[in-house]
Length: 353
Image (cartoon, rainbow, N blue to C red; front, side):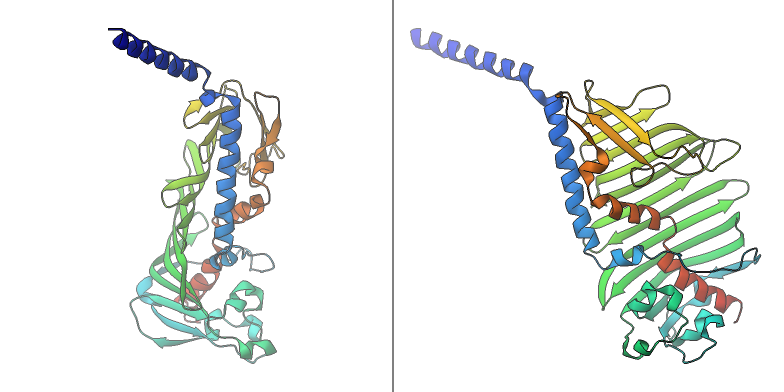
């Protein structure tokens, strides 16, 4: 009997110890918030290191900077994949007039296939303003970049009316570098729906999506497989002027951390969906211009005051990776490297230039 009593007493003591631990468990406290924030941003930084080591990341940093276009041009085009399919190999032209040549003049169609394949030097693609210029170094270049377009159509009626799809696989030096998926619809009656995605060969994916309406929704996401490492989501109410109106809700997710600011309510932070009521969150916008999206990548930062009184910002915790995230954010708005080559060759074929 005495043995049973001692066992019961021991069990009671264990229960009391467990209960005491749960009461003092900092699971929803500042220490866990700070640790979770550090851990989540470090995971993001590690991911960006792997993403930027992929050669395809260099392609996404290509922009339209330095390129010139004829303004005010009005044209119509309905370009399906069937019209432009085939294998096109780049070959530099030795001519002083190359700047005015159609882009397709620098390519030779070698094979008929069911998709569109463009082979060209990666060095030329990285500097598209040199695409139509012959340089002495071009003779040593090889067509080590390839984009294989498996789904495409470009139905263009005006800047405010078009339907566009570009789905393609990318290879560099004959090795898979990733895949691209762009779908864009702009209609004067139904508005704009745009989605672009680049899946890197090492398992990471970057996505951007935008849909207009009475409430405009935009989002930018970086994933590892199906796990969100970073996401910004913005919901804005339409105004008569400007692409983005009054901000209704902003959500930033970094791993286990989620920061939410809604109209009429102060910013709140969650760890694994558990609200952290003692943390102080301040959203700091560097530019109040409502014509554009606010993002930690560009015009916004978020200051966090932890319960222990220490203060940090999201940009500080992310560190140098913020510029690489910004590159992804901006590039997915236009995916310029693919649009420049594929679309302009498509236009040249359509207009029989």
